[in-house]
Image (cartoon, rainbow, N blue to C red; front, side, top):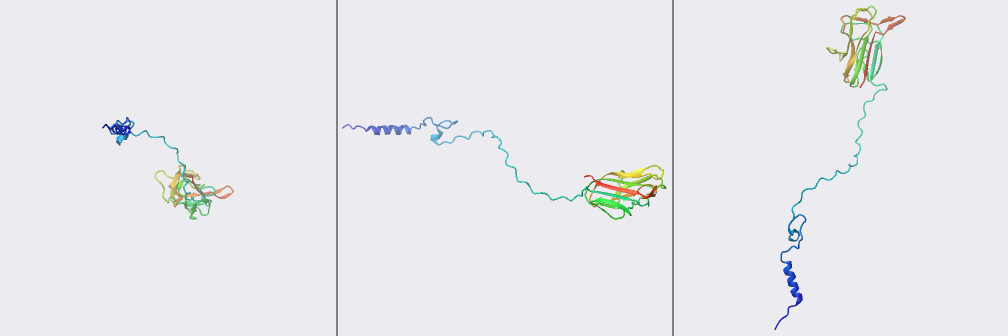
Length: 216
């Protein structure tokens, strides 16, 4: 007896043979050889690409807290203007006195006799002057002392080298001062000086002046 194979069974057998033949049907990873997708083989990692463009700037952060309030200044800053209208004799090395005298100041203290005290640290312009009497001959020397110290060799000095009586002598300069420093005016000449006197009808004209101004 001759048996005829079913045509559908024949087709199924042929399809199975083809699918098991190890062929990958030309399907694979781009850049890889073979049939890695079908055979479940991972491709090697490619090179890192170039860095992208920088992104936009982020929003501005919150404003920080307000700082502490600084010290209160006067309407015209920090200054002292001390003057004497009383004749006096100032010995060599001694301080000039300002009793009686006149004081205009802000952020300074005065001991009531001969010394100013700084209340604010800063850089100051200082000027001090002596007005010798008509009977007091030179040469004259004057210095502005800080904490009773006269800075050497070139401090806040003034000199008048003439010998004629009545010649004004002035010391001035800039100095960095710290709160608590004291300021006074001293006779550094070779002789005691008599300062002040009368000017015509004016009795007890100016005898000395010490001015200090904080510039920054």
